[in-house]
Picture 1 (cartoon, one colour):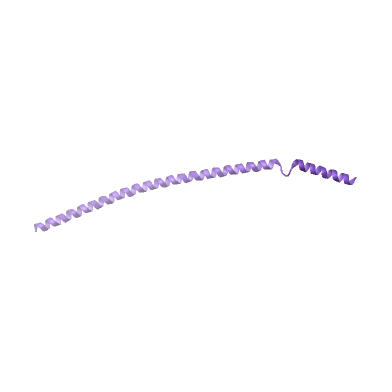
Picture 2 (cartoon, one colour):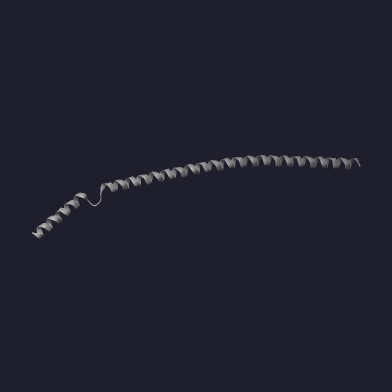
Length: 103
């Protein structure tokens, strides 16, 4: 009788174990939801990084354009100064030559 009782209990335990399976579907659903949330968080994070990179790139381009304008204006000023100094040298040289010729 003992053996029949033990075998019946073991059979019931095995049947219940087979019906429930190794894991529950609730944990797999929770795992899928967690994975989906983490995937969306990663995508949002990457999108934010891309936006920041684009904004930084645009700022750098704006600074480069401003610096280019400054360099161009300084170059024009420098050329003007050089031209002005050449004109002054020419005038001084011509006055020097004019003074020599008169003496």
